[in-house]
Image 1 (cartoon, rainbow, N blue to C red):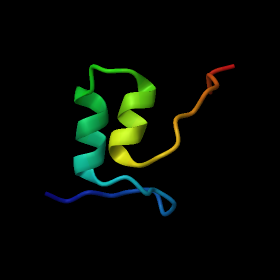
Image 2: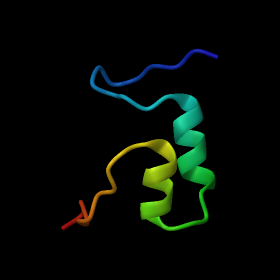
Image 3: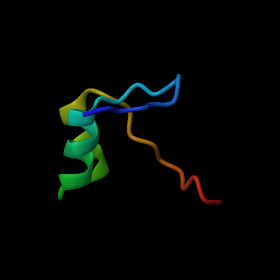
Amino acid sequence: MLITLHKNATTTPATRSAIQQATGSDYALANKLSVAAVNENPSN
């Protein structure tokens, strides 16, 4: 599969899939993926 990512993209296809399929809290997902949970709404 050919994937074109933004030059600053740091998530892998597996990580994006995990995010899309996640059903728990943002905090739990962030801990599972070893990343920081964002606490603000980027659409504001």
